[in-house]
Length: 234
Image (cartoon, rainbow, N blue to C red):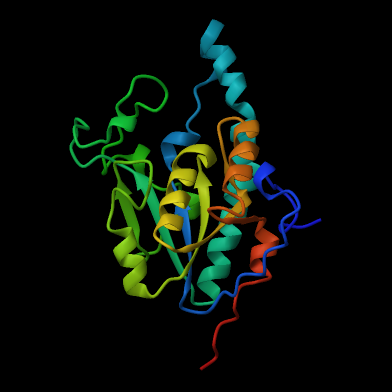
């Protein structure tokens, strides 16, 4: 079993296997989505009780996946792209106005998604383990899609990028929204299962089935690394 036959939704049962994507130097980029400090913060469980403590435990599998799988795999991917001279880009949620008036409606609705993340505060920054280099592009978005709310489409087109490898969080929200937007703009998208996470793993698995073979090819980190072009010695 491999990415060509796994994670298939109802629509693609029995469909022919897709071809391997042809990834070329200068035409493939890694896009790390929303792996920000705010999402890895946790309160001291000793200070919690009732619903708050239950919520803490409900989120524990997500945090374990982030620290044991998602962040390490993103670190490997970033290092591999850089070593090959391939572009690494980042997207993050951050409002430009301190009161967040510039946020899209989806980021203002009450509940978990109603986060106020001013652009210069620690909470909105990319986690230190995956920190961008000075010359790497970081787009700041006030929407779920990294394409809709920024000039990312223009940037990718200007750079000659054809394939975009997407990782990050949350699979069923900003990752999915970005992937669908990229696909609609005719970028060839790859999503890496083991470099993404959702708040609940069932949501992660379900969303990848929706994306695979329609909006993206879904594979794992090792499968992607085997397809990356080597750096041109010249």
